[in-house]
Length: 309
Image 1 (cartoon, helix red, strand yellow):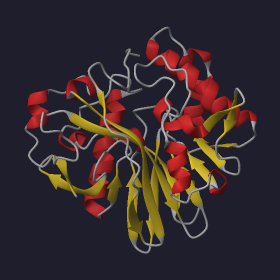
Image 2 (cartoon, rainbow, N blue to C red):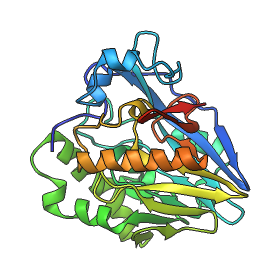
Image 3 (cartoon, one colour):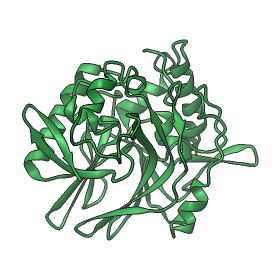
Image 4 (cartoon, rainbow, N blue to C red):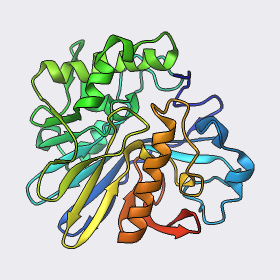
């Protein structure tokens, strides 16, 4: 696995956002809480991308590309409120974490205070869904209390795909001598193991129904057991991507992938299948790292796709 930092060399962390953006899918409300946003050259995100191709994507609006031609990205959590469940999808990077990743170590952000100020007490969550176990998706699974990593959402069940868990739980999967693997070893120790030890984790497989409106669907490639979140209510449908797609530019260039992808070819096939299905069935795509507008409809554009906000 290649060495890479999620905060690439030259990346700029932008002003931290606090306002909640939301979407309604039938009786389900999805709200976005940003931990922080960042910008980077597209080549620093996708190893096979070029700035020329990125700048030439005609529909890529200012939410996703800066005037200087940099890719804009966001690290945020998504709060899903159904008639019976309050669900947190992915928990960002987290505070106080030791990380072998420039710009991501020992963060001190107001994420948790902003969450509670928005009316979402930690104790009010029923479920935490982890699309996968990379460090920028599970950090707020735990918080530092009196020197110990303690579950942030003490009344929630944390749902993790079994294949994903098994991969990172194995020593050979967690640490292979490079910085990225070290980050993941640190992540497992401080953000996964404590919730396991607290008895709060349910390991699930395949398509898993969380409640009437929400299910986990396999979208493997970026990681061994990656899942996305399907929401269906009142005849409407949405899909929370996770890292199945990091940036809307991958709609135009399905082959653009991250060096840390577990199975790059499978990741391409997954994007093709998911985007094609969403285009055919009018699914609202909510990007886990997509900044600004964050969500839109997938439109077929020849052999590839585009996003319509």
